[in-house]
Image 1 (cartoon, rainbow, N blue to C red):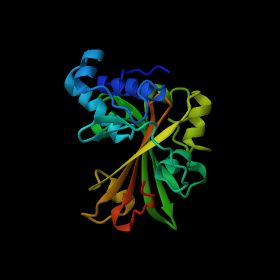
Image 2: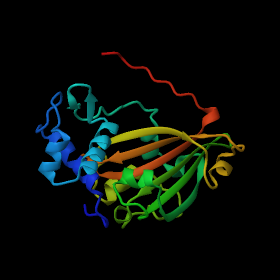
Image 3: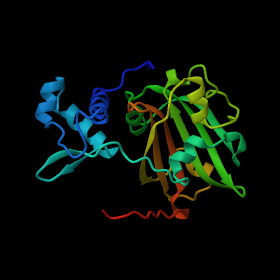
Image 4: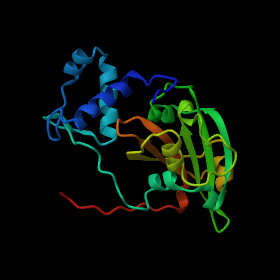
Length: 242
């Protein structure tokens, strides 16, 4: 699938390394070529190589081990738990969800979202913003972003609530396949009209869960910024120690 704007060099390099991990060229447990080797092999600058490796580390494909270098972890585990924010953002049926569609527009996105989409800064993308409510109270503000070319010939630009999930809609209309999701959680103060939409008092922060949905090649298909009032959240996870 062709996009209107080429991804930055570091994203393309990260995707190439990811493909080599998936096809077994770099098996799990082995070392990724050194920064110098990658610079020479791909003809890219060291900062580009460093950014590509950081992206792979952040998404769980590789990890740094002191004294060993960068080690391949393999494909990140796809979490099947039903309560994950990423799954909810991708599979929510707007027409059946309590709340309402706040805005649909072409917007210039933040550096954080542009980087997640693999697009240059200031490129306009399609945004759908939905406010989720429970018992009349705003509980989530979900801003979902899509590359402009991917949104063509779909109903994503419609100002009406979608029937069925965005994932189902894109997979049917554009013949893409969602493969895995990365979630990044951070805290910040609300911006613009976010506090008003969520009914927050001045100075109350939000938790931002950045949900990046990719196909098997690593291309980002959708990025959703899920905002949660921080004073109403408690995060808990249980996992085994290896």
